[in-house]
Length: 267
Length: 248
Image (cartoon, rainbow over all chains, first blue to last red; front, side, top):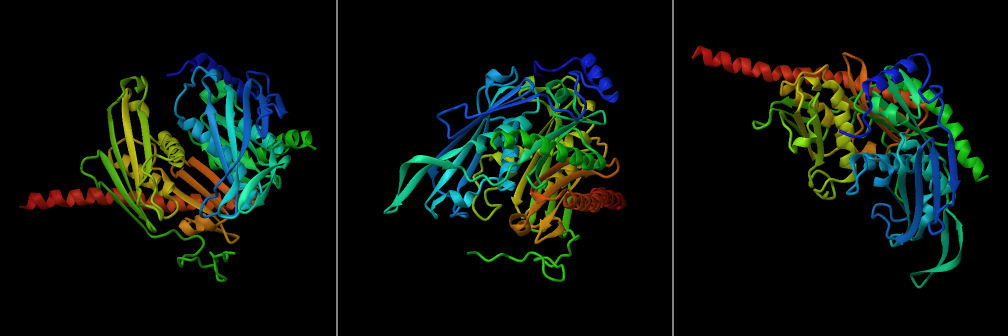
């Protein structure tokens, strides 16, 4: 079906190594690949970041515009998240309308940010019912080597910590943009941790080959207070209830580790 | 300022009169559509959902066929009139995501390798939505698959639990889903103890999550019993009809 399908010998090799507590790329079962985060890489975006997770590479750009609020939330800004699987990132990706996978990625990243109330949307209201700030988070996958969810969620968080909104004044019901910027009101720091089950072994941060053979994955997003704010099981296999409880314990610890990479960077 | 709605009163009773661990009334029926190879209808609270299965049948377009197993395709869709504000009939991003997670919850139940190079198409139409449509949809879809005679490892039962007004509640209704603090939909195969769908939104501590998750599993087990009853009821009706015809 795809060019990324891996041979049975490779599958067996990965699974056998896992049962002895090792991974093909030398990592331990609960180790992330090396993570590099750069912020402010796109000057024209109000916020941006690039995350490299091993060979997986994701850029997130945040754009801010003035628009209308949702009728049921007239005094809140609007958050929208979109993901593009650009064809240069993988032989599997094709140009065209969003795929099921890109919709899922955007929605899982969005859920973490929205449900942890990371952005104080009330502070993005300009004229209640009429004008609010709209925050566009655009996830751009540049190289797909597995675990796009965690890389994208981390890049989105890093980009948000780096987002500036323009100053404005309201005169006679009109919004006028003034020179200067202020920080986006960011009040929580959600981090997504993805675990995969391969032959009953739980591993964190699956890379592409592991994703190809995994039974199922589970993404758990934690907010800064250690509360779960989003979850998503993926893949066409199942997990046992015990595995799910164990995965939460592992993910909680890992989420603090990953959050430290972003929050430290921005003081 | 809009007043905060109380979802659970002092004696622990919910807005629709239920206890925290009580399911809404459920009506389940198998074999409700004559054209489909298998079908089912569920009413859970005010949810009204139809599921239909076509297949195993030829795959169109052909290049999608898999050499070693059947291709399961799933479409979850909400009728424009199923919600308060008319919903555009075009598939939304939510429906695209739900179609995917519903498919992934049912794929592990089906012996797809028995039908290589074929497609099994599953359609879920939400006629009226009242919170928890994805789980009610899975419950109906799984019954429709069984009704189609497709061999499965187990029936998939699905149920949500969540948190509202600080209480962990089973089977959230629309109001509790929208105004509550968290929602945890789960799909579960009771006889093999495996979870095929798990999502969460809202805010829960790991301890609260575990409580909600266990409650949802408990709900799945109760719904599982109803699914089996509904399947038996269909065959009992056929048996009676045959016996009646034989007596004439």
